[in-house]
Image (cartoon, rainbow, N blue to C red):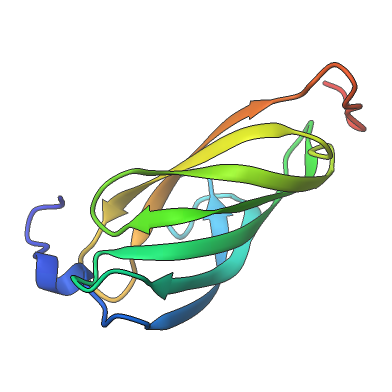
Length: 131
């Protein structure tokens, strides 16, 4: 956990609904290059306020890959969490794998997460934008 952040800063009441549309940047800095957009919902699902059920569409516009990845799963406010990929579009059509979200900065009103992609393209999946 980030120094100075307490559990009380990272909890929300059971049943709290969040809707988000957040830029995906290369680094945790707001002035970093934007490479995509994460849009989705999250509902606090534990009585201690630390876990949520989340769904998201992550649209990416990279040099060699364009499209979106849909994910669903549980999110922990202070620990890394894995989210299975349940769909995709564009270059990510038929992709398989999971996305790991890890909290980076829990202080203040804006929470910053690191997103790691663990993706596999099966042999029958065709990438539209090849490197």
